[in-house]
Image (cartoon, rainbow, N blue to C red):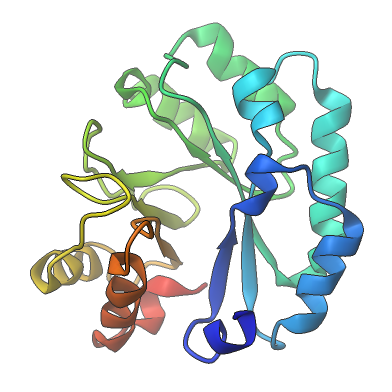
Length: 214
């Protein structure tokens, strides 16, 4: 299916790595399959973000970064870390995140607890060249962040997470909000056909290339 996919899109967010720690062989295979200018964003394993929650996992984090870099090479775009809803803001956790990240990568952090939507977090991320993920999620603020190194948007579906489709009007609002800003938009409302149809709609919107690919 990937050969069919890349005929229409120029980037892919690899989520399989969230459930199973990736290997160099797997990413080399994806690298060889993808066209020259295709870009991958990769989601960190839940072992790091959900189980260990960045505690005592320096070696595992280093291994993950190395597999991404050596496997996908110049086709690696962003590295996404998505934390669970139970992971609420504390200053200690904020410092721990920044301390553990390899800042030479395009790191994107997605939170699922609204306590992270605060200026202290945003300032710290800006200082360290980290992107705060913009999300469309039933229980979270709908802010599209343009102040960070790039725009990174994950559309999960509202009101029914993973299922709901976005209207053309909403897609146009997203386009307008990200005008002339480099970044990535990924649709995660893929439990039905909504995600692929929305992605095709977004592609048809004028100036699509300005908001969907660096």
